[in-house]
Every structure is written in C-alpha cells, then in structure tokens.
Length: 459
Image 1 (cartoon, rainbow, N blue to C red):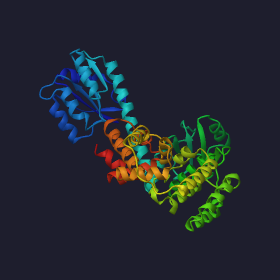
Image 2 (image 1 turned 60 degrees about the vertical axis):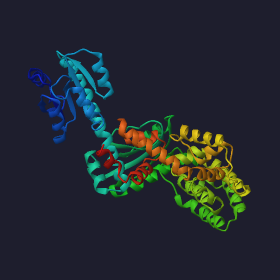
Image 3 (image 1 turned 180 degrees about the vertical axis):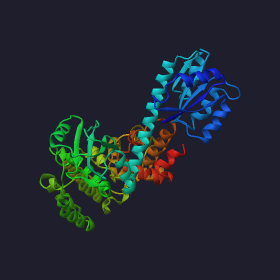
Image 4 (image 1 turned 30 degrees about the horizontal axis):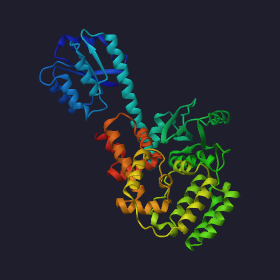
C-alpha cells in the first residue's frame, strides 16, 4: 500500500477527508494527519510517505512554502493541494513546484479520488522504473541472487527463463509472465517464463518497426542470464551482416576468428596495403562469417593500429548500435575502413592550423548532435577533413580527446535530467546519446563514483 499524509489546520476538513475516501479500496493508507507545515517536514524526515494532501493556508509554514522546500529534494512525492482560496496565483506557483493537482474547498471527493488514482499510477511508475534499473544493474553485475529474486517475483519459480532481445522501435508483449528491461536506444530485453512459439516470433519479426530479434532456443538459469543477454543482443543486430537475418536464434562466433587473426598479424607488421586487399575480398565474399560483435572488434582493431595512433581511440566504437548507425551494414563498414586506411596513409603530419571560425563550427556541430549517434567520422565529414586529422586537431585545441569531450557532455546532461525530471534512467540514457545502457551504467559509475541506484537514492 502507498502511504498518504494529510495536512490541514481545520480538523473538520482533515477528518472528513479521512472518512470520505475509500482508502483501502484504492490500495492506500493514511499515515497521519497534521496541522502545520513544520510538522509535515519533520514527519517526512522520520517516515516514508508517497502522497501528500496539503492545505495551502496553515500556520507557520504554509502549503506553498512546504512545496518549495520539497521540490528539489523529494521529486517522487506526489502532492495534492487543497485550499478555500480560488486564486490563480496559487495554482500558478503550485505548478512550478511540480504539484500533481489543486482542489478547492468545499472538497469534491470524486475529484480528490481521481487525483489519488493519478498519484498512485505515478508511484507505480517510479517503482517500476526503479525495479527495472535494479534488474539492469543485476544483469550487468551478474548478481545471481538478485536475478533469482526478480525472477521469483515474476512467477519464474524455477529460476530459469527464455531470453529475447529486440532492436528497433516498439516494445513486445508475451502471453506468459515476463520481465522487460531497456538495454539501450530502441533496444529491449525480455526474460520470459515460457518459450516463445515460432509463430509468435515470426509475427514479431514482421512488425515494421522491429529491425532484429535475438533469442535463446533453450531456457537459461540465473547464472547464465548476463551472457545470454549479450549473445541475444548480438543476434538481434545480425541484420547488420545479413539483412535477411532479422530473426536469429543461433550464431557461430568462431567463423570470424581466422579472419581476425590474419588481419591482426598484418596490422602488427604494418602491412596496410595487404589489410586493404583483405578487406576488399571480405566485402565481396566472406562477410557472412562475421557477427556484428566480431565486426565491431575488427573495426576497433584497425583504428587502434599503429597507422592511427594520433586518433587516441577517438574512432573507438563502444556499442553495436553505434556501429550500425555509422556504417549501415558490414559491407559498407569494410569499404569505409579501406577509405580510412588510405586517408591515414596519405596524410602527412597535420600542421595544426585551424581557424577560429572552423573550430567554432565544429563545436556547434558537437553541441547540436552529441545526444544522437555522433561519431568522430560524422564530425569529420561535416568539417570536410579526415577523422585522423580532426582527432589530432581537437586534442590540440581542447586538451582532451573527441570521445572524452562528448562523453563529458552526455554525462553532465544525464545528471541534470536525473536531478530535474521524472524520466527513467533508461529514457535519460537514450536521450543523451548512450546507445547501450550497460555502457551507460559503467560510464556513470566511472564518472560519479556511484552506481545509478546509489545516486538516485541520494536525490
């Protein structure tokens, strides 16, 4: 049950409110009845409260002053204001403080009930989002005990589940109990109590907004869930390699190993012409030996090679979605890597000449696009120069790498949104440009020194 605190200096109003609302039927309980604002603040320090019904005119601190004090520190608290004064200025101030609703005396209990139902839905949304973050962190940490408890609460009594990941817009639903978590921008993961039938999978695949679906053919236990999610993410992005493979239950990750080992040897020996020749052959024949994850490994292997040392990891691709966004498909990736190598080979050491106007244009581009799929490549194309050249120039002008700067912008915006909005952490992660929620969690911990749950608990 959610706990409701009533504060009104007129005992008759507070008493009538307590007697006239079907609290138990609504799934609510009255935690207390108080007469002034100071008592409210003291009560909230001692006991948990989910919903506050607050009179505007009270001795000591009035209702609006209480709202002002609570606005920054208790964003989750649902506040309903009541007053005998029909003045717009009160309502206007109440809206600024995030108050849920405003009722005039004499109270219409039907309206109060409607607001209580709305408040209860908001509380459920907050709790659901908190549980989703807890589940994501449990998957990220491979916390088997926490995963088993989450699965038990979702009626997965045997501690086993079928894992499925979808990418593209839209969430999926299942007939049997399931848990859903947002893995990144337009990426959703599911733990299902029952296997998904081939017919249902095909129906899901045919949804226009779904780009790909990866799933486990067998149920996995709690100890295997973290690995299963990673595998299913790879399967869900397999359309990057083969556009026809939008529904994927099995992949052979070992097929790409000989290609990767051969290319790594050529890179180590600085045989970049041979690297280009190999990539061109793979573009025509052999690309289907790859998964998107082995394609990502290849992309980063090349950009971390000795030819690209000046880039200082600015070309590093952190997520599967970023790779798909940068190149579209694996054959374009092979062609793009060949182009990057040719440009790096032919480029002399930069003169580090950069006009103020050009630099301002670059910074404006970053400011306008850092919340989307921005990359060093897209920024370089915008500025009509090679990625390697831009990387060195950016480091000279700012003292930090391009990637570090963009990550800093994203984290600062994420913290602002966590403090000032009621959006879920998954929504915020996607809003500020993190395409992979697990990477967001790791970056958040590195940036703040706290887990997301710890940070939110202190808000």
